[in-house]
Image (cartoon, rainbow, N blue to C red; front, side):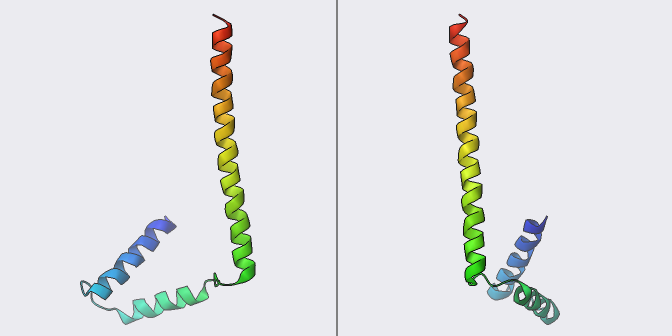
Length: 83
């Protein structure tokens, strides 16, 4: 849902820049205020935390894939033994 809203905002800004949509100054000011209220990604502590979280997610994905593959190999091995 948040992703869809962000896409709508990006489309609006793109359309305004290309001249396909009229500028609504109230909307642009609200969007500017929203962006200004977000934490700066240049902050070293933020980047470090983000990198750690990203690495954790990637590690979890790899472990999940390895677990699934091991389970499949185990099932194939048990199937061949029982024949």
